[in-house]
Image (cartoon, rainbow, N blue to C red):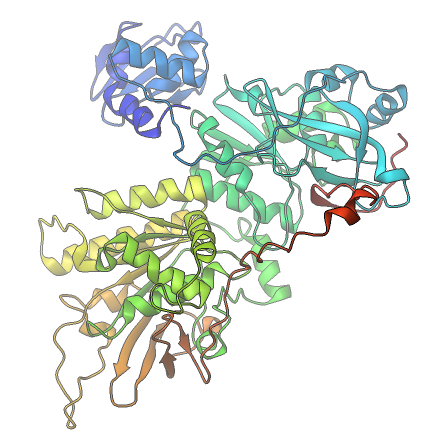
Length: 633
């Protein structure tokens, strides 16, 4: 795979006007360039090139995109080939991506057993899936060990096998038995189903199951993908998206045709958040749950009509009640959304966090505001909603030091000293942290635009739900206007970014030098005391002040602003701080690990005893779930 920075260099270096102009003649038309469309037989020119935006737009066909997209369409080649053409044309060096610590996945052996039984073919035909579609997807059939099949001899039963290919190589297989039990191959890579089919498409359709992918293909759409493990009520596991993201870089339109239920809608919103709502459309299959139901109940044309009638997500900032009617009814029937807490009653009663908003955190230097924020981030990550976080935190440099603080909180043990965490625990928390927290550490450019660009990419690639700017004064402020107006403008940029990308920002800002009370103690800062502007109070959803009382030894957490009453309430709590592991606590400190750390290796059994032992049952593969049903094959 080509390194992302090489792809970005191709996009930046290959100006759209130069690339298009090297293939067809362009004429000046104001700030833009114009010509007859190379993709249609039009008589009046409608093909427009915008040097300012570095994109093209063909109004006769609706096609648009950057230089890479243009070469794909013009040359009829795939994404990688288009990059190579441009790199060769403009002498740009391409470097293949090589992970320094590649994950070792198991790869199933492709047996090419696509000769299906008559019984299975008839079962698919009842679902209006033809044999030619089964052949196109390389559906196979065979005996396999399945969970919940203890009554079957050795657990071995006949299965449908949905094979996951990437670049022509078998990566994973999903097995489905007659009672609709599912499993994937244990320790195999989790990727999106049917990835090889969309190499030459800039628009893709995403469904929620292999059967739905077959149904959409049956209706005439080859550019269809499926998620491998469906939608759940809790946090969806999108590992397959992380593993497949580099194969989707060329896609400019995502048509989301997921199940029409609560879980499907939640997954749809998360995928749209990852790729950008502006790049996505949503499909409703008439009065049906999904594509295969629509195909069975109606016909191919009904599936075609549903996809062609896909609607854009509401325009940002422009809504009517019908656009949000489903959410209105959900709020009415189930109550207002409470947000995500940190599972600490003393804190949760005052504040819960919602994606799409800004929380300000202030406090006198040395009073622990960064320490408290790290504590909150760890607890949010461990919640059912699994908040992954991007960290721009020069206050905590070097990165190794910042990591050590997270490791202490997660394991409950100090990073150094006689009682420090074991090497096994350290390795485990390194792996865990690497998958859930991402340091943003630009070498030169600390502007807000640069930070948000990195966060946007992490939303897409890793699904982060929050990001940290610690602290405001560490940003590279290139202001050309009054300081108060500048702060207002940047805070608007941050809050709008949060709204549009459904991500939460924690912004740390220092107060002005505080005076002292009659007893000589520093005064507790308020949001209005943050240096240079009242907008730090006015434009945040929530405001928290961390104040360490050195007389009592306790940390006072002041919840000074809470946007909505159902999120919590203003007030103050006292918390202890555990010096050994950096955790805050009420009552007695707890040093138990927050992670499911690996158990010590078991003692080796007596091998003489094993010589006469019977073969143990096969270890279960990854089980995706099951429901009732009877499939006659």
